Amino acid sequence: MEIEETNQDLQLAPLYETSSSSESKLRKLRTIYKTQPEENILEQLETYKNSTVLPRDFVNKLVQEFKFKPDKKFKNDQDDNVTNTNDQSAFFKFIEGRRFHNIEGVHYPFPNDDDECDRLHLQHFLNKHVWQNNFSSPIAHILKKSSTKVLDIGCGAGSWILEMSTTYQDAKFIGLDITPHQPSKIKPNNLSFVQANALEGLPFNDNEFDFIFQRLLFSGYPESKWPFVVDEMVRVLKPGGYLELTEADPSIKQTGPAGTRLFAGKGGADINACYKLQKYVTEQGNLENIKQEVKNMYHGKQNGRLGEVSIENTMCAMKNLKTQIMNIMQVSSKEYDEIIKIATEEIRELNSYYPMIRVYASKKFETK
Ligand SMILES: C[S@@+](CC[C@H](N)C(=O)[O-])C[C@H]1O[C@@H](n2cnc3c(N)ncnc32)[C@H](O)[C@@H]1O
Image (cartoon, rainbow, N blue to C red; front, side, top):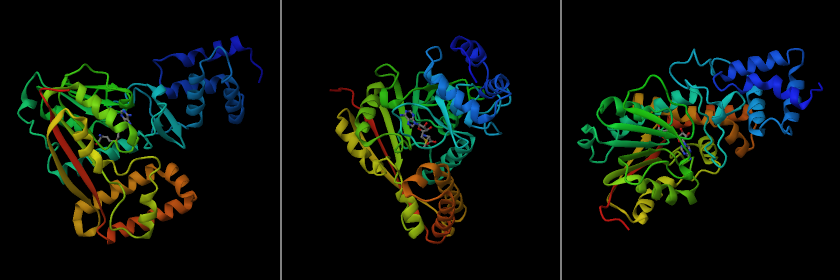
């Protein structure tokens, strides 16, 4: 398939329309190449990577999208009024039918498609049940004021912040995440979402927020970046405002041989981040009234409904991490599925659990 570079650009022009969804771009792409077998299209797209007319990122995105077969997981913008309402596909890449972030320098390994969003919502309610609250900081009174601003860093599917902004309708809430996988239409008016990479700093002014909440970012931040991110949180926190960090130790305790193998394969994540929260907060220097709380997330039949829901959450997380962990464990897809099956039975029988640690503190009025 020989196409002049200028013609390539013209032919692909409809694909530049930012208003159309990824699926409709794919439809146009297929129309352009309808006489070609799929392998030829992919081969041709590869050659576009060296084009001087088309931005390389754009072509990479097309290749990823073309490899991804649209199905019910990725619907038209018009169909989807709950999650992912805007087509902001530059934020995403697709691997084996799952949608991931596409942000350079961020190693966060989980997908962010509807299946993972459902899991995050489930996990939110598990967390709320285990802690018996949505936060531990003594801030309930300020959440009733209209001047109060709350930031949720790495807000995920928005589970926590959707609930908080619905409960406290006078305060203003901002959910920040590297990707826009939160609802953009169906949400309270006092809530907005911002896309930013916390590892590059927070896009807010000094002393802006009364409460900053962050939960379960251990797989997103390398160990070396934690002090920087905590510094940034303290910078944007008002004097007297509260910072609250909650992390889990994902290496499940009291499990059998399959579980031990499975939960050891965490890639580059600092699985001990939860044990260092107090150190980060103390060493930052501008926080006081530092408190720590510890809870266990139990699995298994001794724990009734909670145990079953935790198993569902944990095993769904391991399924969502399949591609990465399979590679780390050096096992085939079939072997991985078998390990998951055995590990599920182990954690059901052995009353397995993982610890969770929450640290909260207020910003000093006189800071260094
Ligand atoms: C495990 S989810 C937790 C979501 C939410 N905090 C909760 O508890 O339901 C982690 C979230 O952090 C986001 N994330 C990872 N690295 C990030 C970064 N560098 N900056 C901003 N968000 C990040 C991911 O996109 C994901 O939505």
